[in-house]
Amino acid sequence: MSEPLPRDLFDPACPSNATPFQIGDKWAGMVLVCLEDGPRRFSELRVPMHRVSAKVLAETLRALERDGMITRTAYDEVPPRVEYALTPLGRTLFPAMAACRAWAVEHLPAVLDAREQYASRSA
Amino acid sequence: MSEPLPRDLFDPACPSNATPFQIGDKWAGMVLVCLEDGPRRFSELRVPMHRVSAKVLAETLRALERDGMITRTAYDEVPPRVEYALTPLGRTLFPAMAACRAWAVEHLPAVLDAREQYASRSA
DNA sequence: CTGTATCCGACACGATACTG
DNA sequence: CAGTATCGTGTCGGATACAG
Image (tube, rainbow over all chains, first blue to last red):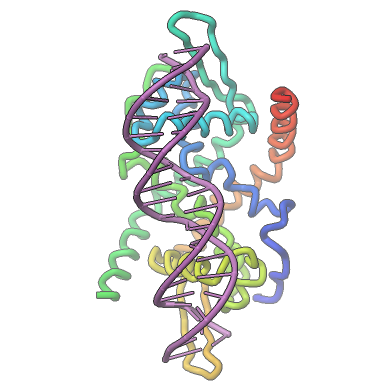
């Protein structure tokens, strides 16, 4: 125990480094959850994500599209309509996201306890 | 399909919001991985995380300690020695982290492909 | 409706110097 | 060795105004 650990965690080949680029992104995960049950329009996404500005939401959607996680479909109508939908690749993220969510559900109380004890020790 | 979705994802009670606060943190996950095989000293952690300044590493360690994920043990010696170690609560994160890493290993090539195609479409 | 362009403040982060 | 204090910079992200 406690012998190895010489590697460079910033090596691009290290999955520990590449992993959170989607799940860990501040809002990408939210977008994916919002699309789980079917395609959504830009304005539909803004409702549950009301604390995110249009600018940042647009940037998040671009990044997810670029990475092949979602598709963007613009319909030539008036008024304009654009729908975002998960790709099969995007769906592959859900098991890992579910594991994270399950952890939070199970252990979040313990974390909050730890914070309280830490705060009272500092006082 | 495509009916629900009225909830507020910023509700503190929503696990989708609370989940990435550890795994998604820029360096917290790295620290946890570094501690997996046993306790480490501050300077030992700086080797694999050489791109993180001492200041930020210290802040990350404080946050993880506050949340009950790691312990900090200072030995009264000269020169000083401080060791960080996982708590049982901290260890509970590893299954979720493993799920994320497994996703990355399996699907990262597809993501890189998507990026190339996206770049060539833009050109 | 679905964005983009611009401005601007807040904060995250690194570098450096210093302390116990 | 294990940090903290201070400073400077770059980026994130909101608000607003505007375009297709």
